Image 1: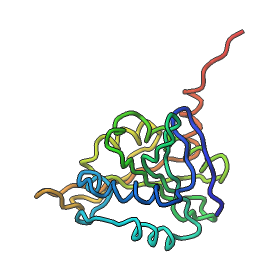
Image 2: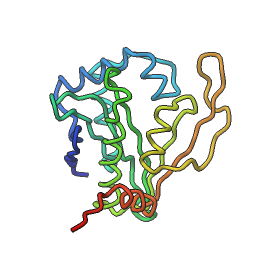
Image 3: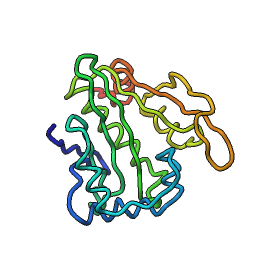
Length: 190
């Protein structure tokens, strides 16, 4: 699938390429907290070569986009739309902001909204789903603001730091996204 370039007010989504991007991504895996927010597996380091091999093995139907800041073109994270089911018009998504200094600034929300616009308006999907760990409250708030609704839980599915946590399933439908978009559009009066 062709990799789109999507531009917002503060971020741009586009292709991940080049040694610098791979080194940046590998650097994010040196942060154990980042790994705990992203993956159920125990933390482990990834080299740029391992990331390149993983990217080359990704399903051709999936869309993986780097998140770059517009002010300095720094790669700060990624967002995916994984193996869309064209018959059901559904896909799964995931996102990670690897640069900790950029956490909590709304850049992930902007990136997710750009991806949802592409999924619903360009790809004509009807549903986008994701999973999030119960302890990742910042991500859950972001997803709720983007229009996702909690749809279920896999109770006590995650073992982290000596405690069990739920795996939360969330989803957004095209009609939900349209409703949210209409509320956010400015009203122009003459």
